[in-house]
Image 1 (spheres, rainbow, N blue to C red):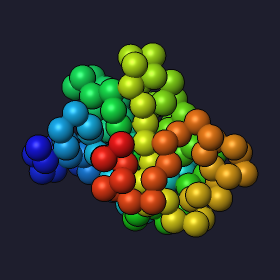
Image 2: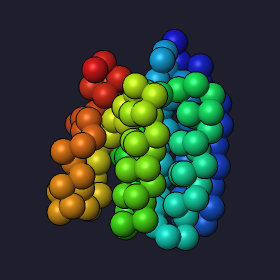
Image 3: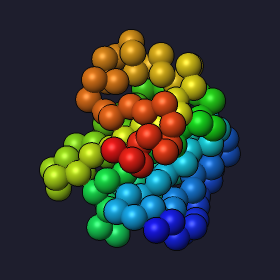
Length: 122
């Protein structure tokens, strides 16, 4: 059951919205994820885990840029939820964001999906 947007946060060039879809927390990041904005995403992901969600789906459709700080936020969230038996799934990555995962090999440790529907169906 999709409960609509249950939270949002923003700082400068990054907007993050959270909604719940069944057992998943869907975190939608829009804008630029970098050293200056990473705490917004980190806090949102931590809030999801604190609320008991260990299946996180990050919708990257609106993410226009991501640097290594953003990657580290996602890797940290992955470690946290995997320790609880969960997983982080990534959906709708733009080519510029997908390239960061390809270069670092991080795409091998996340569930990566072409669409949000595919990520939620898994």
